[in-house]
Length: 628
Image (tube, rainbow, N blue to C red; front, side, top):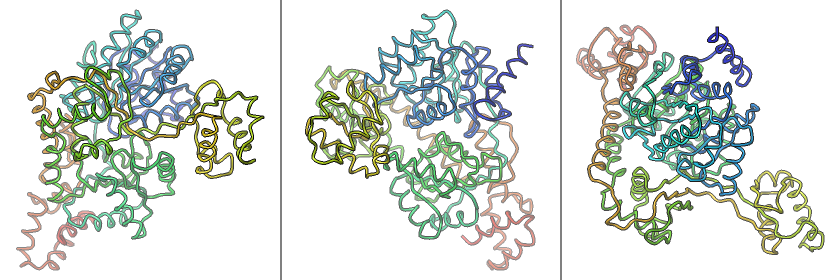
């Protein structure tokens, strides 16, 4: 009876806040496990609806749900989405001032909030560890849970702090706080390691089937990638995402597609937040058809009608590829994942290991140079968070920027510091004159006086503390340009009416330990070699996936993630080739045999294919190979 009542309440919460009448596969089982108080690791494919799996049970329990996530942009999106649904949620991440964090933690304790999102490095701070003991915590949620495992592809040392938070809460409250861990990509080894690192009382893994029966996996070996991409855009209708490895490639590929009449737009982290938001919004609404993006695009975006995802550059792991491919066809209608590759791509990918792991001595040297650049002496800087300009650092020390970046990331993975993703910290304003004194100040023009009135109308608290402002929002209300707003703010700052901190955009370096001398910096060779070996295995698996045409793509992917029993999909390029005439071997081998049979005459071979193929898709596939 209790179970039936609970399931009914689950559906009512789902309907009330998310507008759905039923759950997706495995969501209900995961939610029930969480409501039973069990530590739960849920592995759901991209688009499987992971957020609902913790948001619904959190709404059904008293207290606040702690959500640990490594992606600041995704945290902000989820907090905004929850608030729009009338659910009180807030986030704490790098780039916020001490006072902002202090206020947010106070709200989490006393403000009747249901969700507190945290970046993992926040878990280390004494401020958080003290305040969390005062919170009534319903669940600890670990998003992107594979990051806690050193066997995973994106290990984050800060995630190990979650176990310490569990221990703190266990000593503060009589009830044990259950963990809900979620990921889209975890092998069996990673899943077991995640449960161990998160101190699960007993293993409890709930895994959805990874089959995507509506999704065709296609790998194409091509030299003219632009030409083939254009062919995809022209032959597959509907929205698409093209993933590339570099920002410049995104710009160049988008420009090419536009020149060929395809409605496309580049997207990458080098663009301003407002520009990215506008591009994303237009694409989600269907006003832009194709996004050409670096790999950040798509995280947390639930656009159901993406008809194709094209990997223009080879990803460095099966995990990354599977996540990106999974953004196609979430509405369960026919969709395509197309991988474009060639031998130069394979050679580049093999170089990734060397670039990602420069020599240990080089890494140790970069460690010391970073502290010199930031002007921190030995045995200092512990607990500091500081803006870090990678480009300026590399230029000052005449270092190759990419190699230096990976050296810094290796030190990050070793736990000494955390380099966050690029942040946009909003502009801030504080009035340093009394409100009454404003009436006695002669400004340079009436426009400044009108500007001040708009500013005071839009924001409160400006006379007591720094307040975050949005220059674009002010410009819209003033009927002027953003440049004009900034000019007025600079002028008011110069005449000592306000203090103005302009908007900044920079990664943050969060330093966890004091600067060590060279002899005290521990970066063991055995651990370095293990990490190199793991990355090499992942890169080899990616290369094998595209090169081996003897096995169904779907079967191969599913086995990689621990699902041993699965049937060939019948839709991927390998299955379509193997369906022809019942012949074994690779599609290329079949065509070579056919050409020999036809005396090398490709036209004759095409006529034979037309007779033998059982479907248009099969014929089109083989003809394409024949042309190559």
